[in-house]
Image 1: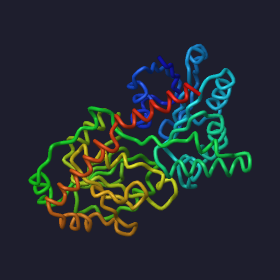
Image 2: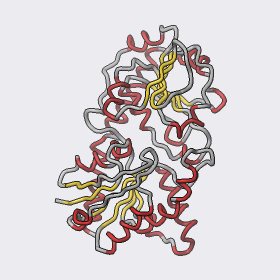
Image 3: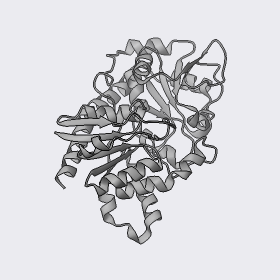
Image 4: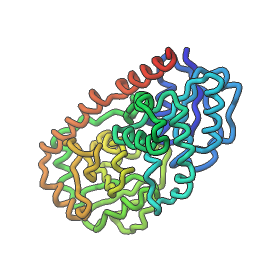
Length: 348
């Protein structure tokens, strides 16, 4: 039995996709966790209670986006006591825009994050581009003190959904034919206020039914629905019953958006929906994701364009996407990779 002490917000999307919950579902793993998340759970975790007894009883520490200085100092102490350290991130903390509501906080934490990456025995991230970004940040911070050993300890473990949540409706051409015949097709965007700059790329909502999930869009009208943020189980239930045709993923041109995973497109497929997305690295070359240029987020115009796709083409794209996430990016594959990395770390 491998004992892991988890630091981070156990109720966040990160914990759901790649942290606390996947760890608990690994065979031969026992997970302890802190209960001290105090602030900023949307972007980072701060802790006020760290059980030294449970840490001493554990084999390794798993820090999930816990970027605060207290956690970093705690990791350094745990490393001094011979504990293995795993650090996991799925966001770019190094290229933050000044209009980001968390700009001051995130930039103040940058040295703390670097110290965590240096002390870690294993670093896991969600995309190849984020891995490259972290390597560049460490090289910039350490200069000649950074060597190839750092690159060898950072690995990509992609975001995916746990069994039960990663289930897909059995669709036919008639499903898409019915949706395409609707006068106003149903589009859905999900996010929080930190994504507002990307949200503002969209315009002209008159020709669609629009659901904004996670924040108040400020839009009103009989075709607009604003849904506040739901807990993750309720969120997944909501989108599965939302009768949406397309998920929307506008992503403005910053490095942090190139680092993002395509987990939203996977969520869309569980609702029987395809995705309209900016051509960022994880959103290109996938038939179930239609790319939209930065200047083309006129949603009424897009409503007309997507209707040009026939039901057969939409069903084919949907089936290819479902097969990809069931086979190439399954939860079982990611769990196998996660467990292999942990076991190798235990043997080192």
